[in-house]
Length: 465
Ligand code: 5AD
Ligand code: SF4
Image (cartoon, helix red, strand yellow):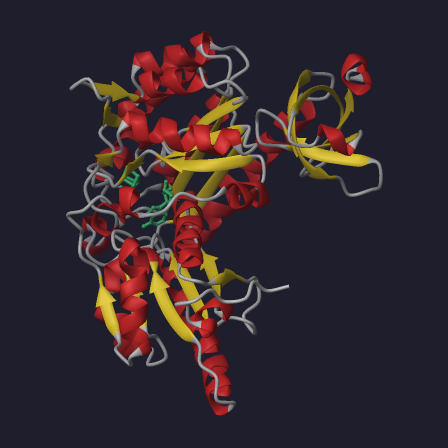
């Protein structure tokens, strides 16, 4: 039943529904929840269906050409839906948020007439005001890098909202990037590196844990460059922040992503030894195994430096597994350069990875180079690399059979009597077990490995408990 409107509240406002569709990275997933929370206060209920929505927000990604193109084809479909609604006397406002909004600004309004608002990632707290203007018929683009602190002006979710989102949550600790890798748009779309104060992050984490969250992933475009005010006039590093968060009672697991090799301080590597709650799984993009290409990418390290970080991590915690990002077909990449990437992957042995064909992005230095690689060569290299990485992923999954580890249970399993959760390495794990286990960690012995999930058995004392 719907709550009747209170005096002074517009009845129509209570009935509005918003659909936020997120693309790309985890930062967008986090931002989407904050936008939903903010609009919740404005009377918008969350919906998963486009037909119901009075407001559709596309939270977009600009990292590769394909990602940006997808948005325009999505907008084309929304425009048709909007026209159909208009014909019935209803309206649907369309907002483009995220990195396409930031990168293209008013261009989006010109390219797709059905779009009402374009809002960059630094302006989400201004959404309510912008929507009011849109309802009066304005079409606006707001892509200012705000002086006010976006985080402080976005509301915190309430207990019910947190509960509905499950046992695992993201917390943004850092945003932006100062690295300027020559292929990447992020420094232009997300701006300069900025870190949130320690106290704010602790308060947000405690609120999440208090409502039942057991696993927190600290996110940032360059998360291990985190250097946040600690309240004593000093600054805390990511390792120090992790140490503070690990003391929160009830929090079982900590993760952080995404890191840059250059900022992989010894102190952070040591944190993997010192903090048991810090999961033994590190996502550390390498992009290429060739020193020449790494230099052209402006990554500021060579292949050996990457390998020695992996070695130090494994020394700090022997059960650490690695994941990575790769780009093939960067301008000027020779067969020998590509072979060096394959060799690096063979040396490390990744548990999981993401790999992409190089995609020239307007405004980035690498896009202007005249030694771009042929699409067919890119495709061949990507297929070869992905075959190797997939083989490594399967080998890693198979090697977990017989091991015991804690699984954080998230939901009912595929079959009756089963529950499902995640291993320390993010692998889905299914076991026979009671629903009371959901929301907590339990010790599991892995007994089978499929291609995308593992089967396990609750250790006897856990099954009884
Ligand atoms: N082309 C292809 N892949 C890219 N990435 C970033 N920019 C590009 C690009 N222009 C990849 C990198 C990065 C991941 C998030 O996306 O591997 O780590
Ligand atoms: Fe892009 Fe490089 Fe910054 Fe990562 S470190 S966001 S790849 S510029």
